Image (cartoon, rainbow over all chains, first blue to last red):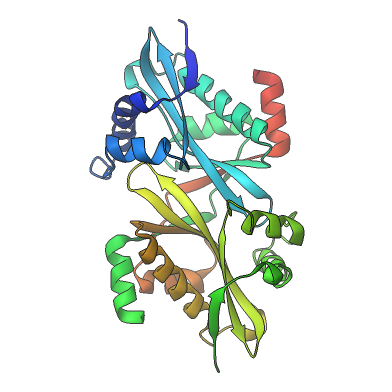
Length: 160
Length: 160
């Protein structure tokens, strides 16, 4: 099977959104995706792109993607954050995910960052094993915190 | 006590680095801070700043800071990430942290993002309680994963 990894173009954003939704369903959050194709096109392909996306093609069809952007660590400076890495369910176990993962690591190395970071769900044991085998460290004592839009407005109403 | 919150300037970066180091010590990672004042000056005050920093002053002295930057969620679009919020130990419990936290929420609201996000150490119960009371959600089933520079180079040696 020939896997071709390339930078995503604007015209890939529908396929990318389909993969984003597929991942959200896998992560048991089917209703979480509020973003649209137009949002992705604007955010990724303007004068100041908010992300870089790579796609995996097999037989000229997009079957996987990885989406990254820069973050800033006060310990080590600029880092690459891997937001999503998704492969179509029917194409899993064929090396597509690993090819995308390697591409992300190559990109991070080219950018000269001292860290690549991402998050994983605690029950996703297959992914955790893969990450550990690749040399990454799982930090299960750092918890995510999120303030959503409604809570943000409530907080500001009470505290402004 | 009069607490003045303002955007950090380049000349605040030494005080900001001191606070970054104080936080790293508190987080039991005293040797983790590789960044320098010059790195912070370059990253935060060039043509494309990598972060926005707010400082808290009491009696014209910087006693706390909050450092944020944008991230990109494939579910809700652009978000604000709060990387660090630190108050000098001797000044804790006087409302400085809350004033900085409110400033970050105001900033996020002005920027029109749908989420503010950050991480917390699982043993930092006081912080966790404060975040929950403010309306934020703690997601302890999402784990951080990090690939550091040495592991990245090792991975690429084996997989390129």
